[in-house]
Image (tube, rainbow, N blue to C red):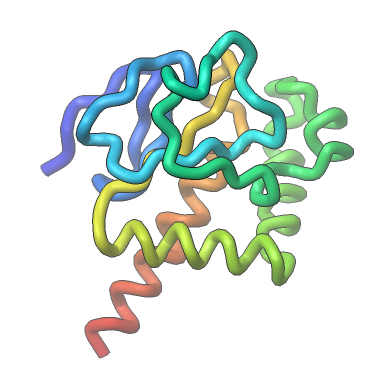
Length: 140
């Protein structure tokens, strides 16, 4: 059974979750990875308690600028970002996160104010789906 999640921490599965960089780290976060291309303003490396920073998995600069966290562009942003995540280099990073999530919690850290419309929401769904595939393959 999952744990209650706050507005700054959301989970689609118990193993892959998202959390704002400004929310305090806790033991249940497991592997913490920043998934923004830019460092979260005002957050020190010590306070962030990151295990990794995967700039390469973030949306391209062009897509990030086009989106501008405009909820009216959310559906198209999701489509375009999923297409970027399907590219070979980023797909390898998705697979690495999915594999790690089969062994323990993975928390995708992001800096956006909007907790519902940001790249971590999309990435969480993609990594969770890849994790489910890993688990299914392991059973067969």
